[in-house]
Length: 461
Image (tube, rainbow, N blue to C red; front, side, top):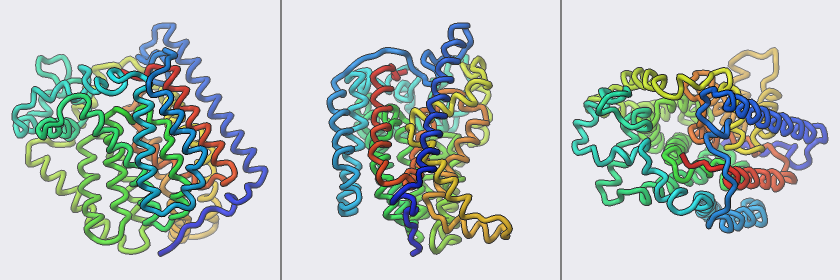
């Protein structure tokens, strides 16, 4: 198997690259500050941002909570011993510890807002999926008539989140209710447990693609993800876990794993319409496979097709749902939210979700890719060289392409700090390019961002 090694610069970063990192960090800070100032001015003028603490969908409310000591403990542990242990621990033990740490970090951040508001009742609001679960008494009938209830201002219109997604999202919570796991606590816990699995799926994919050492370097950044503020408890956390698992299975050798990955990614298309953009990441993963690319592509395609056929046969047509969702989108706040603000302020929200490490890490990944693809060569040779650069270049670049496409579409005006979580975790693969001597400082910035956002803002919708 082709092995992707960490860049030589990670041993001793040149001074000019460190200065470039600080410059990018300054640009990030300026972007966030500008988005906050412009957002405050627009809100004061009565412009319909529908986000009191723009660029985040939140309100200003400094507070402490029961989760504060736990969040500090998890952050301190990862910063103190986590980075060193990530380099030396056995692989299975490392993944297990990372997963449990991610669960603890996510739960602690949720509990900063209190047991009820931060966790138990977070998914029970009128706009959430659980509001619709008692109304689903006949699943086949619900699927067959799903699109008839997407548009707003009708007696039987779906609630906001249910209407804004394909029926797969609602089906998840209906299924939980049917097996005795109904209610806000069980739903929130499932979202946290599945969402935290990104700390397993992303490293497994990287290792399968020949970047085992890089996977170890990235793991602490996945654990202390600032986006955990929204990962728990939110359906978007569950979505992130499903997408990451599907992509990881595409990377694993054999025929069964890619087919299973295709089933999960096909299922993801029926969790959110926006996950059509995960196709960019899926193609990147398949291109990075050392062997069996065509076989894996066919197996994954068959898995996606099986899910699509099943939903279509049940009466739900994806394209009809998407067309109606766009119309529903502009029946609500999206009609007021100015594209001219959110098209760039969304990126500030992403920085607060993925963390300040994103810009410098992504700069290094793009630079590594650019140095690999030398001018004057054929496109085929350039593609081969880019693939040889490995997952620490191609995966974050693919995630960035997906995010930019979603941003420019105008269908994600605000709230991207949670909506883009499934892509943010793959953007952080670029942290493998950071010098080892600086990673602890960057992790401190990640943890500080999460703690500041969670304690200064009220992110509960």
